[in-house]
Image (cartoon, rainbow, N blue to C red; front, side, top):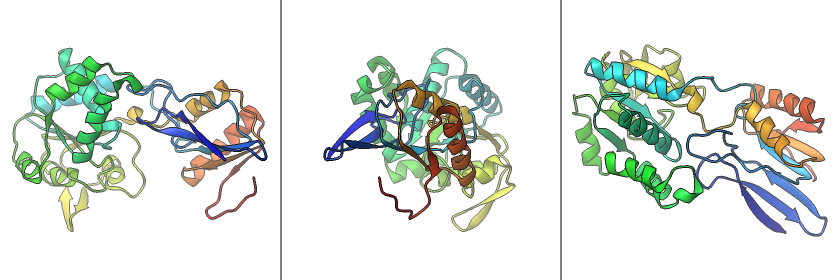
Length: 302
């Protein structure tokens, strides 16, 4: 048995896993999360050249990303929020999304598109991930200088005491904190402080899984339950959906068609039921491959 990896372009280090059985000369490839074709930070996923069996994700199997300019959207939100004396809170995944957001924030600030203000990163995991992005800048699109711009101009909130103190800030600033769907982490304490005030803005950055607080907020919930209490939603809530790190169905089809693939079987996984089934049909219709949606606990011979 031989196992090799190719870059999947989703986050730093994400890979497609190629499992090759030497005795039968058969290869099974697991896509993992597949990245974007034109991501802000990551390079496109590397095309797959051979797979007898392919297991492919379908997170965005039934959707296309919004055709919008996230920099302009973010600049508009930040400028308006700062103009009324508010704070911008961005719930963010710690690995990949936080680094992308910090890069975009500092970029538009350097260009004069938003007012100068403090930028806080309040997530121990995101801080460590940002340090890794800087050390391994050759593995993504950002240069050493661009990584340095993030490091030098972001105030890192490391301790619990510093995090608690940040909740007392009342001047315009931006806070990036995990988790990205507001399902846990330090961001919950900021939400309790900032949600009740209409001067503030909460900005999500990508798909919100149904049933999460993030999903409830972007769908217009009037209150959300945090730590056993309901908190009124008076702040503005936005979602920059185009910042998702997952390729949409068109990008995944483009990736699948870029190599020399002709698998005997394809299994669609990792998506809501509708997304997986739509992705199955799109792959079948585009390439003529034998495609099924994998069922939970299903066993197959390959």
